[in-house]
Length: 406
Image (cartoon, rainbow, N blue to C red):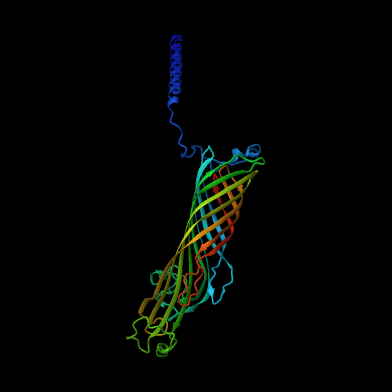
């Protein structure tokens, strides 16, 4: 290639490069602003973090911004209801329960954000025992391992709830006794949050204010069972038998059993305003966190009492005898509403360990106290004693979970 052609090619390339840079510089004046709700393009959830990287970082720089999420498992112990028994009250105990809590939110670089939380928890304790039914089992469901339908718990039980074996067992039984504690809780929070300047020793405070909705369902019940052991005539003449089903077609060779249940189900819908704060402090890879919330509002209460009866008639008392009749009837229903003033608080504390740039594991403790305005035990009806409309609910125990960019 001649010198003239080579020189011409170089000047052409330089002119093209300079013109391209000029166009890019002009277009930079018209770039659209970044979307604050768009995740970072270089999001590195599993990017390792080293002690040297965080040694000299200021606390304010370690507090994350952007989207975050957490999930925690709850291993809490819940208090029993105060039931009216004569002139006294039942003793107070704590029964184990479990649940899950999820948190989602966003913190802007301007140090304000939103937090949404959802949690569920349940605890129960029964005082009773299983009683075998007539017949003791459904032999048609007992199969070998090579059969098309294997033995329970993954057999035909769920498809035959009336005459089949209990799910997970090769026998048929009713569970009778008293429900001394049964509570299911659902919890929703929507909070506006702020992040204040770090304190002298590196701690950071995040005040919050917002709304909280809690639904606490309490159940109080009793179950009773009676059956004709070997002679239906004496059973029908006894006071144990309840004529809640047609008995005209019964003969002395029939086998009859009855299952009678009393259930009080009480819903407490808590509509509250809430204030609180979150305080955290870093020490190397470790982060200490403490949270507190105070909420108050109105408790909308509804209690429903149901007394039901199941009567089952078989052709005989032996294994393999057919089920002739099944009757279900509600002997009594009753419903009552009420309203109470409500107040409660929620305290949490945890220790987290930073594994990667954005992931932490944590464990801690929680104390949730719905201090007043809770109706537990339901109405006093039938054999059930009922409970106060203005009592408390306490749940306390341990939590453990995972954080993403919190």
